[in-house]
Length: 310
Image 1 (cartoon, rainbow, N blue to C red):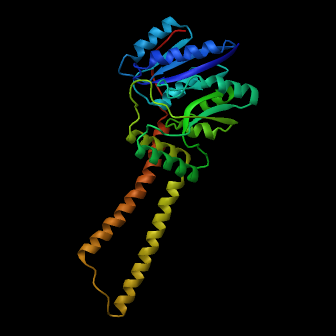
Image 2 (image 1 turned 90 degrees about the horizontal axis):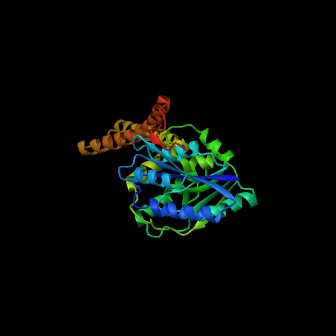
Image 3 (image 1 turned 135 degrees about the horizontal axis):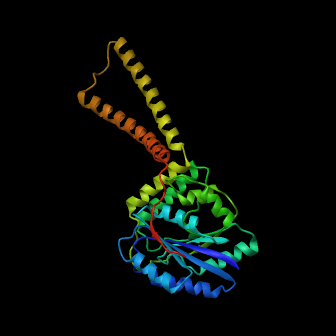
């Protein structure tokens, strides 16, 4: 039988796990021609998530769980789930039910009948999301699509179903600082997009604060574009040119015997402005250098504390 592995990254999801499992089991019952395995990856949760996963595993042999020694992040959980999966097709879905599990049935049909390698999802609206968060999210997609070779779809989710060939290709991308949406686009393959309305969490609260999303967006930009480095070089060239023009202007004024003397306050303002630009450009270079430093360490993407035996 065809086998589908459903990868579910979990971090403090005790309030929603039972509801999610019921939805996933209902999906499996609606697709008797397919054999399912449910791979839950506990990303170092501090609540009863692991305990509930053990209970689910005892109730259903299709359930497997892997628990990290600490919180390594959702990207590591996604990677671990794909690495441990054995299905002919692999789905990635969050446990909060903002991603409807029932869509996996439509995804599978599109891959089988239409020859796609991946069927991914995107939200067509951001209802219920804070306006400031929606604004910056849209700006992020516009920026990264302009400065990067990979093209992301506004509103796209990690929720998707992929062929084993595509999953194996993703696992070959071994970088430690991962941005999955960019990696999905970078490896290529034929992708179909399914659209659906935004949904609220079934229970619990989101683990993504505005600051975490901001840092995540920086990871995406740095991982798939070197344009910021070029921008810092351009800024340096512009200020060098301005300095030459100002120096020439002062020289002409002095030779002509005139010109208003520079005030102390004006000089301080200029120094602060130029210093700020220099620090900004150094910060851009530092971000790329720090990523290089982390990659050269070659640390594991995650460490398992315990896992199910099946």
